[in-house]
Amino acid sequence: MELILISNSKLKIMLSAEDMKEYNIECDGASALRRGFKPVLERAHLDCGFDIDSGRLLVQVFPSRGGGCEMFITRVALDSGKERESDASVCIFDSIGSMSRLCRILRGRGYGDGSSAYEIGKGAYALILPEFDRDEPLPLGAAVISEFGYRRDCENIEGYIKEHARAIFLENAVESLAKFC
Image (cartoon, rainbow, N blue to C red; front, side, top):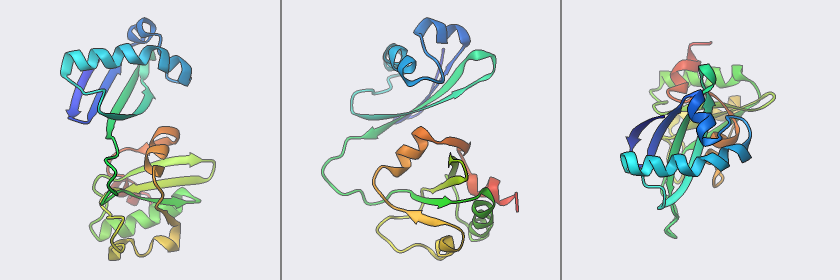
C-alpha cells in the first residue's frame, strides 16, 4: 500500500492486488469496500497523520492495472451552521459534444482551472467548475452555459457526482475537452 498525502484534506491511496486481498476490498461493490476500508484509513492516520475524525469523507475508487486500485479520500469539513460562501458550479449536458463546445469557449476566456468532467448516466454529462462563486452572478465566460446545457446549484450535487458518476477528466477538464471541438 502506498499513501500520498496531497493536502491536509486529501489523500491518495494506491493498493496492489495483494493489498486488496489483505484488506478484503473490491473496486466494485460498496459493501466489500466498506468492510476493509476502516483499517486502511486507520493506517493512513498512523502513517501520514491524515485526520479521519473531523468531517465526512468523500471516497473515489478507481481500478488500476494488475488488479489493484487507487483511492482518493477527501475530508469534507463538518457544517458549522454557516452558509458556505462559495461552491463549485455544476453544469449538466445531454451530450459530450455540447460540453466540449462550452469548454472551448470557457478556455478562450480563461476559465477552467481545477475543473472536472463526469459521465452521470447514459447521454448525461457533468462539468464541475470550482472557481465560480455561488452567491455572485456568473462571470461573462459562463453566461453561455444555457446555450449548451444548464447549471445546477443544489447542495451536495458536486459530492454526489464525484461519488456516483464515472470520471472522464479529474483535472483541467475544460482544457482537455476544448481540444475535442
